[in-house]
Amino acid sequence: MQISSAFGFLPLLLSGSIGVLLGLGGFTFFYAEGASYLSNDPKACVNCHIMREQYDGWQKGSHKAVATCNDCHVPHELIPKYLAKMENGFWHSKGFTLQDFHEPIRIKPKNEAILQENCVGCHAELVSQIATHPGNDQNMLDCVHCHAGVGHGPAR
Amino acid sequence: MKLNSKLIYILTILVVALATVGVMLLLGNVAQRKEEATQNVFRVVEITEETIDPAEWGKNYPRQYDGYQRTVDIERTRHGGSEAFQRLDEDPVWREIFAGYAFGVDYREDRGHAYMLSDQDITERIKVVKQPGACLHCHSAVIPAYYKAGVEAGIAADEAHRQEAILKGFELVSAMPYTQARTLVDHPISCGDCHDPETMQLRVTRPGFLYGIRALAQSEEPLPHLPSIERWRKDGKKGEYEVNTMATRQEMRSFVCGQCHVEYYFKGEGKLVTYPWDKGLNVEEIEAYYDEVQHKDWQHKLSGALVLKAQHPEFELWSQGIHARSGVACADCHMPYQREGAIKVSDHHVRSPLLNVANACQTCHNFPEEEMRARAEAIQDRTLALMNRAEEAVVALIHDLQKAQEAGIPAEQLAAAQALQRKAQWRLDYVSAENSMGFHAPQESARILGEAIDYARQGQLEVAKLVQPVASR
Image (cartoon, rainbow over all chains, first blue to last red; front, side, top):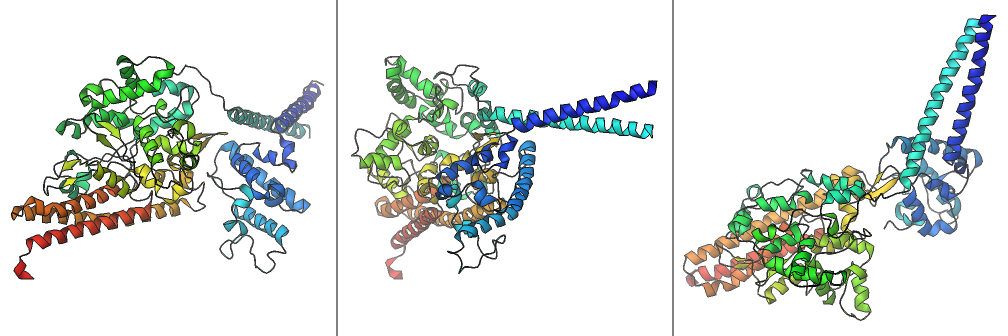
């Protein structure tokens, strides 16, 4: 009898602590504007201030009228798109929280390949006579190697 | 069974507790980043024109002050850096090139901003020659002292006459003996030298630059890298070019450095610090100005030539380079933006970009740090190789002139060769004294050194005509 009453206390404590965790977690998610990262809004990309320069540059870039961050930086298909967001989201959060990333920031090879595929995605007709090798800038130059200003505007 | 489920309950509680701690830490971190991003400046002390001590400014701007304080760091780069090694020992030919001049006695590599005043107190150059107060124009936070001297000389002590008082004080303090003027200042460069204390806007305070840039604006020299001057010219050169109201912010990020990192001389008996830009910023335009006003820094002890000493024409050489033409300011490489948490500040630890390649170069250049450093050092190594040849040529001419004098050739016959020494030595010293080992404008540096070699060898030919007996033809 005594044992079971003490034992009955544990589920209560557990429920309570899980509730606190859920509440805190939910608040942190809301406070950190977590839901915005599921959207297509470029403003979500400057939430953490690291992308401020890229965001400002994009405002002055020629592609602002036709493409948001996601149009160039994540795949267009639904599932690969959210997989890429998940992976990048993890590395970005880790980098910004622990402050342990290279500066100035540099695109990863995997994302470079996605970017190149997206250039070709829209400009397929124009470059149909040119071989492209997404993800291998040594094999054949990516579009942005020369057209560096189209997305993020002039460097200075 | 009961014990097992009890264990599971307890473990779960522990895991949930740890997860909660993790979430709390993350929440705290997010809140901190959000706080940083609001970029609050807490004005804990009031800063005025009279506030000279950088520590006071540092109370309001601690991030910038932290960087400023680190200019005490001493670190060598391959060709320079901030260690005060004796350049005369590193390359003894300079003792001969500077023979008869204070730089032939003591010519140490310059250190960081923090040492500008104390290093001048200990240089042999102020002991072997009586120096004027003019030196303090760039070796100290001198503007409040100028203002005070101007007010004491009778200029009204109100805001409307502030600039007038400063310019008057500039004249008075420059003419004083160095030891007397030195008692008027306590600090090396301070925040107010480049910043308005009220708004923190960049500003030019040094009278030498205010006058120099006006003269430059009036000249015919094309200045594509200084768009506000081109605009002022296009608008019909109304009034004077006023740097503090007309220059763009990006230009100011070079002009504040150009207040001191320039070629200059002390004009006339008043020892006014003067930037020789009336004809333009090129090495031969500055030379033409010096020739016109018949300026000489000293008479060479071995050759008798009336020669020039180049100071540190960083602003002038940068003006000839590709970075200036691309709109890159001094501060972009020497004080690049750096991130602290969620905010960006300009790095006030002013230093060689080679000590900070990631922030200084990679913002624009998408290549590895090692590659960027190798590119810069390749330019510098090439400049040094050419400079060594130019040194040999100039010293050879000096020796020839010396021998010609010993052989009894009259001075007036040597004038042409001496004039060529002046030209050659000026060009060699221009690249040597400039603090980038050619990097600020590589091709221009090579051109100047090429001319130095040519003029020196031409001078030797002149001497040879005089000393070789006619019979040997």
